[in-house]
Image (cartoon, rainbow, N blue to C red):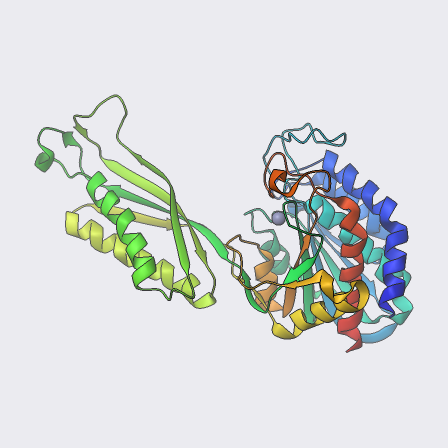
Length: 398
Ligand SMILES: [Zn+2]
């Protein structure tokens, strides 16, 4: 399939994609319950293939059958918004207390656009494409829930490649970017609670102070991550809250002290290792002070690891359709998390970033993803839709 022709078709669709995106922007929904969003998206794609809907998790997969036999490729668009009160002043700003502050409204519009391009040109498609419209990306495990339901298997065979896109509101340009290997960190939480014995602050030896081991533990974690883990395969553990005692009194030994931290890793090995070693460290510190400890890890997203061959395809397809200056190689992964990682655990593929910076704001005044002031340039929609469709064509043709 000629990529220039696909791009021209996508550009013709641009006004319609903007309409989809802006409507979806006005109805942001949260987590795994996106009834309005799901209804809108499924209506937009229902004539383009066979739809399988999982209403209990507000997810859908569209199966587009190619005109020629062949394997399957998976494309993914996430659909959930954030619990952020929008303050952009846009005329299509949301007013319901949620906001598409991470640009998933653009991802949906691009997913709809890619599906249209693939359906229109299906006679030339040497295999099938399944398009994931996924809820719950923002820490709700949506990708895993779709995989658990075997929604990636709707064509009857495991896809040979998976591609997904993410837009950035504070990017320096409208370029595409990716990298082979780790691209985004795993992201998860830990809550550590030390339980001692309450007592009088004048005689701490009469109780079992839980604050002292907690303070030691917070310091020790920073030493663990720098002394036991490779500096070139970093582990980030950042404590975001601590809780102990009562601000009304200083003369009481509280019974419990707790903290919560986010954990980021850039390799599958460290994902497992930091959890084991952190728990061991917490137990030994607690034992040393004679208190109890409870270490609770949340469900975490995995590391986004791109397969080199699929990143090469992204680079080649961008160069052919948009010019090689539109592709940027990322020197480093970024510490943000993405549950698209779970899809890449099962299917080789690539994740691609696409700059969508507000063209009316100076670079230093742009607001990043997740900000209540984040503004995205939706003139990138045709490019994003075209790239997804081109990647599917290319992967199936090879
Ligand atoms: Zn996002």
